[in-house]
Image (cartoon, rainbow, N blue to C red; front, side, top):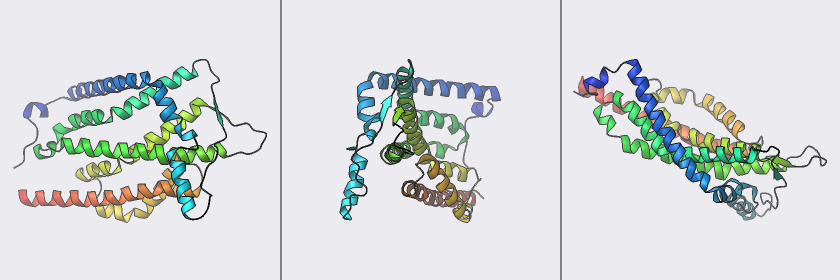
Amino acid sequence: MRKKIAEPEKEMSFLDHVEELRWHLVRSSAAIFVFGIIAFLMKDFLFNKIIFAPKDPNFWTYRAFCSVSRFFGTEGLCIDDIPFTFQSLEMAEQFSVHIWVSITAGFIMAFPFIIWEVWRFISPGLYEKERKGALAFIIVSSFLFFIGVLFGYYVVTPLSVNFLGNYSVSDVVERNIKIGSYISLLRSSVLASGLIFELPIVMYFLTKMGLITPDFLRRYRRHALVLVLIVAAVITPPDIISQIIVAIPILILYEVSILISKVVLKNERKKELKNA
């Protein structure tokens, strides 16, 4: 017979749970703050080597696309210039951008600790055997998030910067981009991709809770395809190639989620039969 949490934890009131959640949020915020300070102090490296790198035609992604293009005997994907310049139109804009970029970097770097705090909050409601999977949960969740962040930075962001930076309705319009607009595009691309790559983890817990099944995911695969294309259209520029490039890994994650859901459901049924 499996045992859950200790009796005192079971008798926690709603306000006790709220207080517990508050301290998890406080510790997570403190971790973001600490890493944010580190990022703030690394201003030159953070902006010149990371933030503004996708603006450089020699960025790794553009060179990779050019190599693929040349492999097929064409220069169609090679980029010589991204013709826009950055500008700051408000007195406090650059300082504000520095603060928010540091907070975003702090969140990304502190993500494993945040996941650990999430686990500590939900673990009292799990069985003892399930609670022993804390390390695996943190490693897998963090790995998927960081892979998503890298995908957003090296794939989604360059595609968006190249397309939107070169798009023009008329030659009379100068391409002077507000620094805040550029940072917003990069931040949304990176964070959205990181969170989207957490899909298998979400499906794992939804299956554990009995809210979804592998059959449900297979039945609505076509609907999921439409949703994936919509998500890809939202986080990428409106050209079909970029949307396909982004949609492919999301579809792969969806198929992986079906396999995960199948394994979880199979294990749950085995436990039910064992305890029957």
